[in-house]
Length: 281
Image (tube, rainbow, N blue to C red; front, side, top):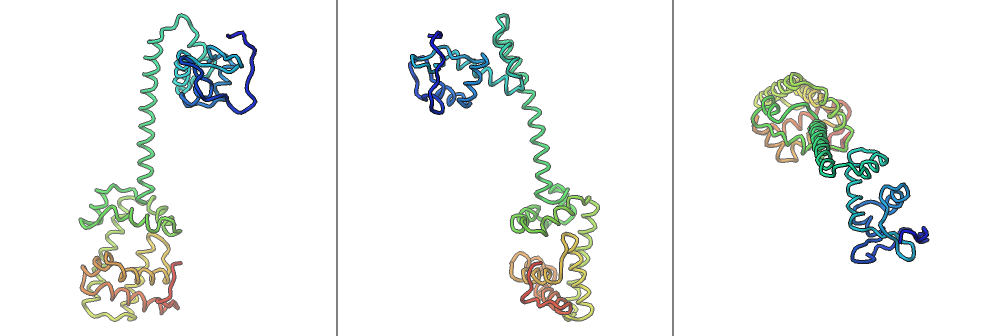
């Protein structure tokens, strides 16, 4: 039937139904091997994979051997071989099929190994992007203390990851060394200790000492992003409104959370900001 004239249907593609127990039309063959009908048309045109037969109407019919050849073409193409070379390999009568398969397998295993290395590198890059710091979870706990939870960073990103401030934090944190983070941790510990002492000592919000502590707190927040007085007031409201923050500060000194909010509010008013209506920005 190979001497029938070349004739293709006017519609896109050919019938996807099998034409017999031992043959598939181009549409069905393409669906089976996962390539497009256009690709099989091209491979037929260049002599890479010619269908064994054609129907009386001129439609291509692919046999089991044709499908097997397509699979071999796909393997070589995945390895980066040009189509012309693939054709020469497959049509070489002296070629040892098993030898070629072993070579294909070895090449695929090498490629898998390279891809696994790339995946590992991408995972490490994602970890840096995700956490915003070049510290392992173990280093984070070592620097920030046993009560530090590395997943806090992930929770924060989920909540604020779309904000400009998070982008600013991620950019700054990405360039910080473990020594830089140790300095931040030490500054945080020192500020918390001074806040607790001031609370226990009855330092009044709005006083010079309280305002100085509020500015130290804002400067510490500005390590991560540019924290305005309005944004600091929003943080003060959040500290009181969310149990996790309240638990953290009240563990340092009873009532510290509400006192810190009042200190931040009083300092914000001194800078022309109404803390009750302050917005993030």
